[in-house]
Structures are given as structure tokens and as C-alpha cells.
Length: 104
Image (cartoon, rainbow, N blue to C red; front, side):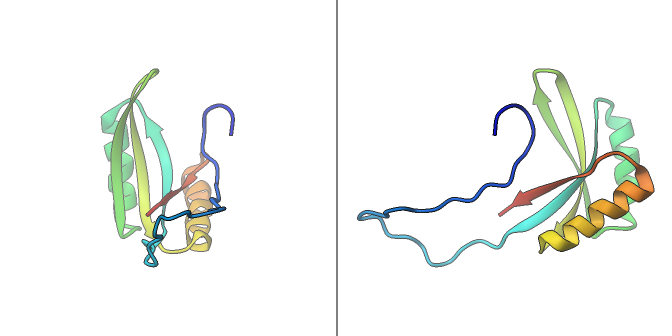
């Protein structure tokens, strides 16, 4: 991928050499980012609104070259399909362009 944003990736091990490969993989979990704000109070307000509809709603703060951003995310979803359904519902209810995030 070139530039800012997110992208799905797949890794293929061509030759493990002498390294041992663990047989247990951490489960893949998905979050949906409902919005990002420079104002913490706006982010907290959205998190409160979403907290009644989703098992987990959180605000993650990141420092970027453009300043401090507060990302509002809901989850945890155990399949991409359920995350996509949640993203569509968020878009219908709140507008914007929700992002699906992958976490192990």
C-alpha cells in the first residue's frame, strides 16, 4: 500500500528454515471505527451513544503529525462479516465512513 490508510494483507511463509512455527494462532478480532475527532468531548459523546448498542465502545487517542486524534471504535467482532454488518449500521445511523480494523 502506498500513502495513508489501511489495507488487508496476507503473509505467506516461503521457507521457515530452521525456525519453529507455533501451531497456535491468536484469534482474529475486528473493531469498527465509527469516527475520529480532534475534540475529546465529541469523541466521548459518540462513545456514550454507542455504548448502549455495542458490547464494547472505546476511545483510542493517537498522536499524528496533524495533531492529537481521538478514535471512537466499537467491537469486538469475531468475524469480518459481523464487523461489516456493524459498519453498515453505523453508516446508516451516524453517517461517515466507518473503518474495519483487524486485531489479534
